[in-house]
Image (cartoon, rainbow, N blue to C red; front, side):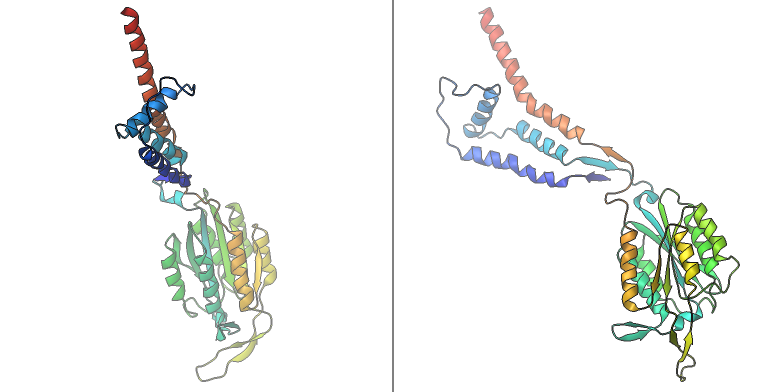
Length: 337
């Protein structure tokens, strides 16, 4: 892919056209017998001026040379994008808790009461909206952990799948350890890029075959950073029962000690989202932490500026070389006479 590293230099392409326009506006000047200014390129400038103002002939050699040198200043590069993996700077797995406890209703968005799963989906979508150049995958976990979508650059599809999540698709319990192990499995084969797992959960580990601390070791072995977000609070919250029954007030404590350990031992951060405002800020904080490592296209870069620079210099020197050759020829011919 052809890329200009400094495209603002292309504005200078207007200068040759401006010079031509100004020279065309000048009336022909009478020739003088003596030079008023001694300059090594005086003959070249005189020839250029005469060619334009008297014969109205456009000096294509000069114009093309300046254009090519301007193109060289814009620093053209050829970037290898043959490998899809090279185009993305970071791999991120979002592990979303969809266990039964996420039906608890203790959040407000725009004055409307929502449950914890809707808040998890809201935070995840807000995070995705601020990503560029990353691949994102989604894992959901309840009684077990499942891959909803593997790592993908198609963030629109990722958001659509998140929107369709429901509380009852993965069971009532929370297999936190299995979710971390599955996230590590999805990320471990991409060592050439930065790899991040973000765990959004409202409880503690109550199911699964793998303990979270065992899964933590796997993440550490593969240099996977884990951020953990606790959704909810330690206070009593409304939990819906049957359709026609009033919600009951229950307490669903977070295992903050475990979540904090998972984050700190992998170089990540733990966040507690007890309110809608807190979770909005958390999403912004993580986006600030996990910024794109590069602002330029990824891939092997080959500099091409020397091609237009060399060609442009040759075209600019060509009239001088021609003038030198004619002068030498005239002197040689005059000497023989």
